[in-house]
Each structure stands twice: as C-alpha cells, then as structure tokens.
Image 1 (cartoon, rainbow, N blue to C red):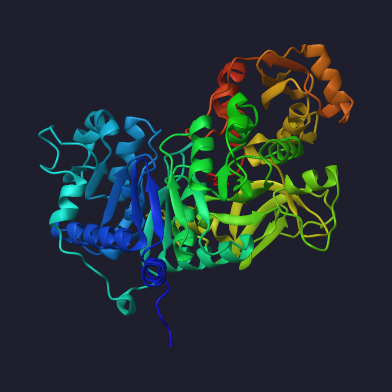
Image 2 (cartoon, helix red, strand yellow; image 1 turned 180 degrees about the vertical axis):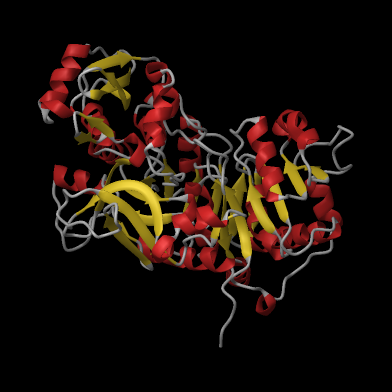
Length: 540
C-alpha cells in the first residue's frame, strides 16, 4: 500500500490522537489540536471560496502567529502552495518575489499594511489582499479579516489518497546577494520525509514543547511547523525576540527546546534578568543560522542549564542537514565537548554529506582538507522556481552544492570554515574568517565579532576584525591582536581591530558582512566577488 507522503497527514494524526491537547499558544489565545484542525479546514474552505485553484501561490506577510502556522496546513489542504514572506525585506524585494511567484492572494498582518501599501500597485498577479488581524479599513483590502472569512467558510478536507506527493507544497525565496532572489521549491514528499528524519535525529519526545524563537518564514523556523505537529507537541509563538519575553514564556509554558542564531544566544546569556525566571524545563537549545563557537556553547550550557549544540541546513534542504551533539561512543569531556558541539555536525538520518574539491572529488576525511559541502537527502528541493539552469547547476551530479567550505573528520563531523565568498586569500594563503571570529569571541570582553578582508598593497587582502564589546567591558586593539596571536598562527590573525556599537544584521540576527565590506573596498569588492562561485542562502 502506498499512501501519498504529505504533511497533511501530520495534522490528521495529531487531531485523531490528541484532540484535547494544547496545539498552539499565541499571545492570549490557546487552541487544542481539535480546534487547530478545525481552523485549518476552514482556511482551506475560505481559500477555495476566494477562487484559489490547485497549484496557486498563496502569500503571507506576517510575524510569528497562530494564523501563519495555520497556513502551513490550510494552504496545501486547499491544494495551493504556501509562500511565507520575509518581513524584513524592502518593498521592491517583496514586489519582485510576489510577481516572480505569480501569487494570487496576499494575507497581511495589520502592522505591515503600510509596507504592503507601498508595493501593491507594482504587483501583477495578486488580486486579493486579506488583513489577518484587526478591522480592514483601506479600500484595497477585502472587506472582512481572516477570522471572519474562517467563521463563514465551510471546512474543506483534501482526500489524502488524491494528493500528489511530488507536487509543490511550499515556496521560499533565498536572499539575493548579487542577483535577484530565487524561489526554492519544496514538495509534499520533501517536507514529509524531512520531518521524519528530524524526529529521528533529534530524538524528539511525544508532546514536546517548542518556543518559535525563529521566524516561520526563515529556514530554522518552518521545519518545526511539521515535526512538532506530528508528535502532538505544543507550538509556543513569540512575535519578536525579546529576552525577558523568551524567559517568561519558557517558565510559563514549560518549554523544552528552541532554536537560536548566535546573537540571540548571546543576548540570553548576557540578560541580567535571567535569574528571575525558572528555566528548568528547558532541555535543548540548537544554534544555527551562523557559525557558533565553543565559548558560546559553554556559556549557554552554564548560564541556561540545558544541552546546547549546533545545527546546519539551508533553505534548499527543507532545511536540516547536520547536528552536532556528542555521539554516544565518543566520550568527549571538558572543553573537547564544547568544541565538538560547536562543529557543524554529522548528517541527519536520511542525509548523505560529502566534502569535495573543485572537481567534485572527495577530500580526505582528516579534519584538515577543505572542500565544498555537497548533500543529498529526501529534503533537498525540487529546484529553483522557473530557473532550470540555476537548478541544474546547483543539483549537478545528483548532489546539492551548498557553497559552504568545510572539513570532514574521521568521526563524520563536518566543520564549516567559511562561505566560498568569505574565505580571505592573503598572500596565497586561505584564511577562515569563522576561525578568527571564534578565537576573538573567546575573549571575555567581546560580545560580537565579524572578520572581513580589506585591501592590502603587499598581500592583496588581510583580515580586519570589527567587534562590539560587552556592556562596561574594556579592551584595546593591541590586546586583542596579541590575544589572537597566542591562539592562532600569526599570518591568520587580524592586522587591525575596529570597535563598533553594533553590527548590521538580517532580520534573524545574521551579520551582514557584505554591508560591512563596502566601506573598505569602494567598488573593488565587485571584482573580488566576481571570481567566487554562485552561493545560496544558508538556513542554519
């Protein structure tokens, strides 16, 4: 018997097995799995009443909330394709994505109505705008809000046996760096099998409680929507990352786990109010989205009191590829464990990882040889939306080429050393900016650090560090240079340090190195990057 592999089966199962169990907590609202499933069916019915057809793209512009979570099931229930939009993007970027995807309907949270107003006249295919919360007042909006349409809708349930598991279910756009964003196509099959693999890899318990600290439009966030529902877990929504609110929700809802980018983890560790909350329920924190450091892993475990390790994946891989907890047969102790758990990690079940040279030949698994991570798994995308050439290049040879440079050790652990475009080539030597940042972050005065290449007449380019100090901390440039030289070969170390009040970041906390570089290259960076291979957005 072959039953189509679709995430719709996850909610069906949870509704049948745990109808009275709390499914979603969002601000003051709470929904059981029976109520959550009812709302999802009504969303599907409302979409069909709006005229949404099979394969149509349905876009949501919203921060984390129960309505966006409902869309992860209600949109494919209607046979359509979900497109969650990054709320941090500029008006022009959002208009491009909506036009490129051919979206027909856009759901907008009240706080983003002004943003939607700024680009709506440039849209070619969106015909209907629905306000998610509050009372719609603008003439270009549908007359009723999301909840009103759900109340009036006849619930719709798809026939699972008729679902095409290879049909597109979700569409996510990567961040455009040197070109326009690309739409990543994820099928029902991708999403279903990825969720099963994550459950096995994390060994997630039935009824787990997860705090959605990462936006659902981001790679680290959307995977939770599926695997947690399958296990009848509780989705705890948080609209924006605020340290005290994170702690309050962990205490109140007895949260078991959450995902963080490094700057979020740093903020929690350094929050002075942390001791006012009971965090004993917390069992696991996974750090992704950017490279972690052994120092940060240790600080999180000591300050928060739970296991902490790294995870890695990309938008194109649904997103998870690797995790870095200690394998049971290794017996790491002391600092060795923090070093290991800060690594990129080993492959999830159902995932194969290789590290290859420029000719796609495997490099030695010695922890030293550097190559590009390539992967294949059930979660790897179908391809890029309407970009067959880019899809063929990224998936050449039946493997997804990530653009991340890494080493591979004998235990099967990968360690990313940099993105291709961020490797610093100084006097013919390759220098990892991530290795330098980890060394700098080990200094007790440093809160944040970013290392970039800057032009140099003798060496071509050399490392420069930009740092943010912890509150009330003091450090000098010469002190930090010597600190690095005591830990790394001198040729690798930054030639200069610059102290800043903050570093520019994306909406999910990633440091925007390309923005930092502009000041120092003044047009030369275009030439420097032209020799780098095309890269894709990393999800974890």
